[in-house]
Each structure stands twice: as C-alpha cells, then as structure tokens.
Amino acid sequence: MSAKRHITAVLGFAAVGALALGLTGCSGGAADADAGADGGSGELINVGFVAVGPEGGWRQANEQNIKDTFTEEAGYELSYAPAANLDQKSQIDSFTAFVDEGVDVILLSATEATGWEDSLKLAQEAEIPVILLDRGIEPDDDSLYVTRIAPDNVEVAKEVGAWAASAFPDGGNYVVLEGPAGVGVVNERNKGFEEGLGGAQLTKVDAQTANWSTEEGKSVLETMLKANGNDIQFVFAQNDEMGLGAAQAAEEAGLVVGEDIKIATIDGTKNAIQALADGKLSYVHEYNPLFGETALEVVQKALDGEDVEPYIIVPSEAFDSADAAKAVLADRKY
Ligand code: AHR
Image (spheres, rainbow, N blue to C red):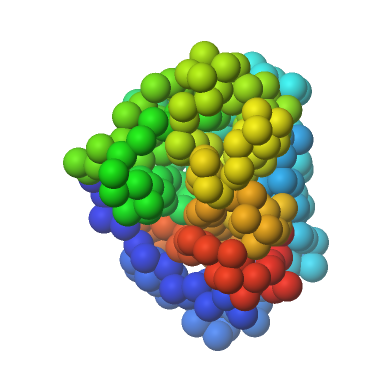
C-alpha cells in the first residue's frame, strides 16, 4: 500500500460509536445534523453493502455493526449482499447489480484483493462513491474509491512481531498460520510482522494458510508439530480462530501452552481474550471491527461532496498478559 497520510481517529472505548474524525473539508454544522442523513428530504439514502458473509467472530461483529448503524431511523436503506461461500464472482455480481440499481453509495469488504478495477471504474462512471471496509485492493489505486476504513494491519502485525522479539530474546522456531491466499490483509500482516521482528533470532520453520478457521488451525499446526518433532516455540496466528485451534493442537501434542509454546493472534474477539485470561494464548492484538459510526460519517461527507483522506485508521489495542485480558473481559463488545 502506498504511503498515505493517515487520519488518526480518536476513539473513546466508552463511546465506541462516537468516533471523532479529522476529515478534511469538514462542514455540516448543527443544521445538517438536525436534518439527518437525508438533509430533511425524507428520502432514505440507499447503501449497497457488498459483504463477505459468514467467516468467523470478527466478521460477524463487523457486519452486524454496519447493519446496526445504517438503519432507517438514521436515514438509510442498507442492502446487504454477502458473498456466496466467500466467492469473489458473487461479490462482483452484487457490486454490478448495485451500480445498475443506482444506489447512492457502495460499501465493499473484498473477499479477494485483486480483480476490482473494472467494478470500481463502473461505479466511478455512474458517480457512485465506493468505500472500502476492512479489506484493501491490490494494486492499491485510491483514485478508484473514496477511502478505506480499517485498523492498520501493518502496524498491528508489527506490534505482534515486536512482542515476539521481546518474548524470545534467545530465539526459537516459529510458524505462521495465515488467512486465505489472495486476501489483502494477509500480505499486510506478514509485512508488518517481519518488520516488527527486526533482528530477533526467531527462525520461521513454516507458514501455511488455515483459512481463518479453528478446525484448520488445529489440523495445520498438528502437521507442523509432527514435521518438526514438536520443536516449535511460537505461533503467529493471523486471526483468533486459527490461534485457538493451534492451542488445541499444541495441548494434544503434549506441549504446555504458554510455556513450551506461545501463541499470538490478531482480532481480539471475546473467545480470544478469554483464552488469554486462561493462559491458552500469550498475546492478542485487537483489530477493532466496530467502525460503523465512522463509515456513516464518511458516507455523509462523500455524498456532501467533501474531501475524505484515502485511509482512515481505526485504533486497536494490544493485550499481552492474562491480567490485561481479565481487566477488559467483562466490557468486550464483540
Ligand atoms: O479482514 C479481517 C480478517 O478477516 C480478520 O482478522 C479475520 O478474523 C476475518 O475473517
């Protein structure tokens, strides 16, 4: 992803839906706010949401938050179009249908990073603004969309790498459980993790996809442990579900999780925070999915013809101990 001037969003966890944004060209004073999204016309704003659909806890939380935000009460008619079995063609078909229908704005969470140029140009010709949620596109051409709203995968993964380097000062063997090939965040997380490791003496002995799933995370690590005679000290799981599966595999292989082998994950779903509190995971970096209010602000700015920076970062916290997990567990919102 090209270097971009990022907007840092200010997020008060207690007011997770009330994100204050440094959007350029801000206007829309009290009058607009009182008028609501439709400017007082009474007509609903039609939003086409090209979504991923069932994929795991993070996705469920993210998509539900979008649905809970773009309500009729807020002045929106949200059409939800999840992919059929994570299939990109079904997403492209839904995207095209939204353009043909003449929706006012399209939200896109892409199952694949590549192959979106034609669709995005179609929306551009129809003067329909497109906002990327979570997932980026490759090659990244920010002239084809209004903005991307997501936590910063590179920075999040860099913090995981830096933690791993500090947790293993004398080195060790590690493996990576990746998301599906072709998904943009996988490449961003690998990049950030390697940067965060820096000069650490950790040796990568394997990396494979486990397709975001607990079952595959378990089976893939089982195979890796057998192939390496259990001589793996660290697992970087690119999402919680794969890390939780890895913990099961490690225990069944006779390893003491948290001592013989440490597992770090990204997402911060409640199950992972609980596992961190229980000592089954050693580090969990949140990838905050609750950015519906931010998306709504951006939709309004885009429809008002105001400038929006090409990448809006949703801040996310890291949790590096059982005590840190126990301190937040009761308040977790997903
Ligand atoms: O794109 C975000 C990733 O997709 C999450 O980390 C993972 O859990 C989800 O399936």
